[in-house]
Amino acid sequence: MADKKESKEYVLKMAKEHDVKFIRLWFTDVLGMLKSFAITVEELETALEEGMGFDGSSIEGFARIDESDMIALPDPDTFRLLPWRPREHQAVGRMYCDIVKPEGTPFEGDPRYVLKKILKRAADMGYTFYVGPELEYFYFKDSKSTEVLDAGGYFDMIPLDMATDLRRDSVLALEKMGIAVEYSHHEVAPSQHEIDVRYTDALTMADNVMTYRLVVKQIALNAGVYATFMPKPLFGENGSGMHVHQSLFKGDSNAFFDRNDSYSLSQTAKYYIAGLLRHAPEFTSITNQWINSYKRLVPGYEAPVYLSWARRNRSDMIRVPEYKPGREKATRAELRSPDPACNPYLAFAVMLAAGLEGIEKKYELPAPVEENVFEMTEAERAERGIGTLPSSLNEAIKLTENSELVRRTLGDHCFNAFLENKKLEWDKYRIQVTEFELKRYLPIL
Image 1 (cartoon, rainbow, N blue to C red):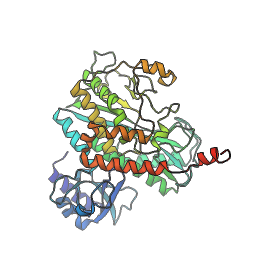
Image 2: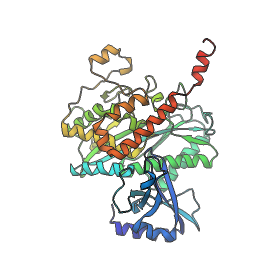
Image 3: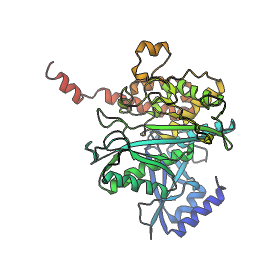
Image 4: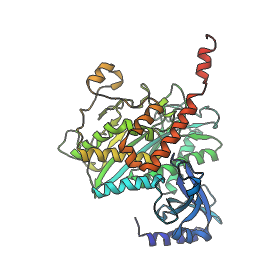
């Protein structure tokens, strides 16, 4: 990170050079919804020094009416121009903000602060946490239906159509905002796509995920269509996941790599993976936070359901990509259960917390499962000690409620606000009368 004074001067210089008129200050609520308010360039210097006050009482999971004053303090290292806004005379910039209380102390309900806290804990242990998420999403004709734009499949090179151009334009916009893209391709389901961004430190990546989702939606909107990160919009088709590749580095060297191990995994990596496996059920409500998330976590559609790990097997929850000589830095664990509609700050925080717990308490890593877990009988899975992820948001909430690890990681404020919101969502869902029930029961009962 650049020196803060230099960073602030750089922002002021960039704003002047690019004729910036408006700066959007971005932050997220507890659910990971992007919030924003704009200031004019005349306010920029004050904002960088003192932050900008706002009323936090109507932001989900923020504050009660009697303690609603909040300050959004821009992080100058996150200044970027928005490529879809005019570039001349009134260009628009954006910065992510840390939320602080009027007296200047961090606000415990700020998801960015939650992630920063656990990253500091990792840093105190000598580690930098790197992540590389793969976000899948769908294009539909509009937000009211699930009419697809194409009928392509995985890696299909379909004739040039709207979706190909949308994906290309999204990649170009991301790169203009300083986000490096590694791959982009058609995914398994019709109208389903994926853009993979290059791995980086977890705080930068959480900011990048928020930007990515907005860019994909904005480019689609500009073309008169709709992009969605809803985990399972189409019945009978694969849902959208956010596989998160993760590793710990000590300085320049990958703490997960050991050339003498048959899996090329260090003892640190094994403890870390064991931590993810042990704590996954209790943090699933964070990485898969919507009722719809659990329509994806079912057998038969490539999404993991069982708590297992392996090298080649894509039915496992954790995959360890095979080591290629000379690519020590690429040694990593891929957690396949999260979906792209989660709050990335909280999701990365609970993953790291689970892994660090494994390292600190030296959890033993169970044997890898190279067979297809979906094809095993229940008895075979029980014999191998293979547990399962929660199968509904309600089940996930109950596991999180009893999780000392998640409470400690999120802090009481975030933990309580998140669970309260999720319980309300479940209750509203539970009392709905669905199309399924009317079709099934009305004619016979």
